[in-house]
Amino acid sequence: MTRQYPAFVSVVAFALGCLDLLRGVSHTLLSSYAASDVAGLDLTGPTGLDQLVLMNAFGAANFLSGAALIYLSLRDRLGALLFLAVIPCAYLMAGIGLRVNGADLAGQGVFPGQYMMAGYISLCIITVFAALRAMRRQTRGALSF
Image (cartoon, rainbow, N blue to C red; front, top):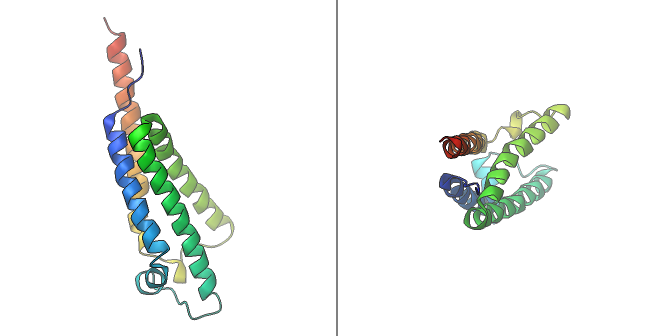
């Protein structure tokens, strides 16, 4: 029996991929506006350009993850499911790195995107567990006589 992965995995991966592309635009092409007007960062100080460089690098990563999620949603549902499982792990590692280096989200580090990201990560986790549950039910149904 070939394993069938739930179709909603592709839908969520495609939607999050599109969101990542939008995030990529805001973190690269609109980085100055996003940093100063949305996130409230002071770009006039000595680290202003460094902050923009980091924001643009993050935007490039958004483009990569967006393209990967969209591709996987259309071509490889298992790959999309695995990618959705890796995303929360990657952000957990980033959070640990921030804590270890004493770079908590305080002062200029308090950004409005953190609430959207909490929803993004939660959606990844919920999708992975819902897919695993659906696959488990499918396997049980196939084995019962």
